[in-house]
Length: 134
Image (cartoon, rainbow, N blue to C red; front, top):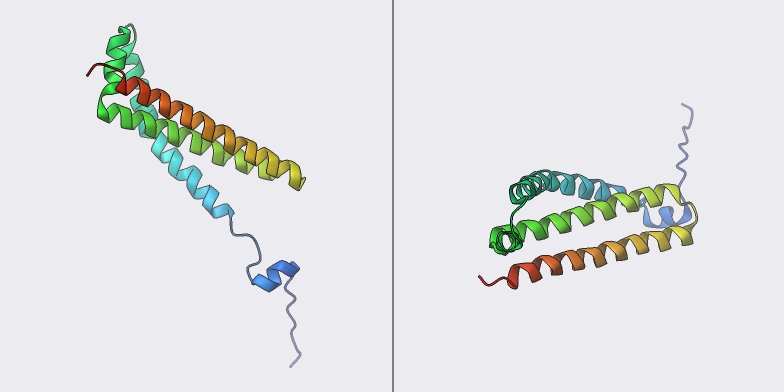
């Protein structure tokens, strides 16, 4: 019988680790799907809430936000929206920026912006929720 040789092409680091690829894409895929699923009911709730509050005085809107359930749902909406956006933008940046340095800077900038906007959004919700005279 003839000897059959199979050649496996791996990078030197891949041979050392025995991993092949980085195995990091599945995490982003799951995060994007989970946040998308979470955003469906949250967005529907938010749109219905906004339409129900159209024309309401500011005190009514503040009382709506001050409700514990609505406060938690608003914070969840802010978090899920920005986490979903960050994961999606990171995937796009990693796919289309081919220079390592530029890609790292762009990904870090997007993450920092999402963290900043998330903190600002959550603080705004909490401030509105706790400054009303319940």
